[in-house]
Each structure stands twice: as C-alpha cells, then as structure tokens.
Length: 269
Image 1 (cartoon, rainbow, N blue to C red):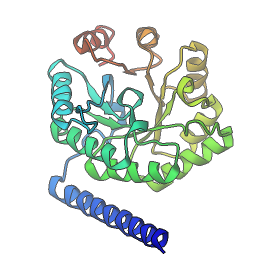
Image 2 (image 1 turned 30 degrees about the vertical axis):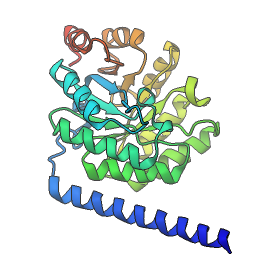
Image 3 (image 1 turned 90 degrees about the vertical axis):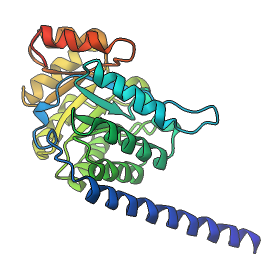
C-alpha cells in the first residue's frame, strides 16, 4: 500500500512539473516574440562559436548568474555565436529542467545579437524531443543534436533518430553533433548525405574528430551547401584555409578574441 501511494505521488508530481514547464515555455514564447533572425538563414551562423561551460554553485545547482557573466564575456570579446549544452557544458550531468533553465538564461543575455545553438540531444529520444521543443520555443537559431551515446546504433538507426527529430521540428535548423570519442558511434558521410538530401531543415554537422579524411568525405558527399563546424581547434584553420568549410565551432574559453581574429583573417567571418 505504501509503495503504491509513493508511486502515485511520484507520477502526479512529474505530471505537475511537466505541465508547469510547458506553461512557462508558452508564456516565454509569447512574451519575447524574438525575431530569430539567424534561424531563417542558417548560413549566417558562422565564425567562432563558443561552447560555454555550465558553472555550478557549491551546493551543486546551476549558477545562472555566473553563466550569464560567461556569455557576456564571450560576446564582449567578439565571439560570433554561443553554444550551450554541448560536451563542454556537461549536459549529461544535468536534468532536463536544468538544461532548459540554462537555455532560458542564455537567450536572455544573447538577445538575438548573435546566433544561439544549444545542445538538445540526449541518449533518450523523448528527452531529445523535449529539449529541442524548449529550444525552439525559447528562440534558439538551431539545435545541436548529439548522437545517442553508449547505445552505439547502426547507421540506419542514426538516420531514423535524426529523421524523427527533423520531422518533428520542420521550422528549426538541425545540426548533427558527431563526437565519436565520447559517444562510441560515428555518423558516416553517407548517412549525413541521406539526411541532408531528405530534410531541408537538416542543415549541417559539427565534426569533433581529428580524422581529416572524414571531413573530406563528408564535404565531398554533400557539397558546399552543407554547413560544417569543427570541434577540434587544430583543424579549424586548415578547413577555413581550404575554403571548403566556412564555419567553425571552437572552445573559446580562455581567449575568444583570438578565435574571432583568426576567422576574420581568412575571410571566414
């Protein structure tokens, strides 16, 4: 009896929290009415895009004041865009509610001055869809969706995963996040090509691999229209110099000024 009551209480609490979160997101969407100027033209999302860390308080809660300060620092230093919730932001150590609250803080600071690309992926599809819904309603310019980690799906499974996300959010640019060193799975160039061909809102991929041949195969398969970001700093300049990739996404934590200067020097931003 006690166990049944505990289960019912837990279910009711989750339902109430989910309802409150959806209400807050609807309110936020109607209140802000952002222009979302970069979402309508993903090719404008270019240059040195800084993936921001997630600061925590001593008690283990997300430190939103410090997060806002870090984003302001990046903007003042000349970063061309902000990403939150990628590997640097430790999203797998946070709840869905914490990640959405972080997005809300970021959106408020950025205020549509530069592109905002939050990471919305998870190892669970329902969480990925919930986070991507929040990103869209808060005004993100694109969603960075990591491959489902640990599960090591097949290429057909990866195609189905991203196809599901792309169909669910036809008005939101989707960027695949390929980081095999952390997820134990790699998106094959042929799979990227299928997604890029089949879905207009599947616009690009962030490649976090030191395999330059992999970059070349992706670019050869998809052509120059595919947006490609590099998550490896050492490969950013070669890709820009080769003029095959006009975009990059770098760590940018200690010296974002250098990132923006490098990109401008080769005409990439």
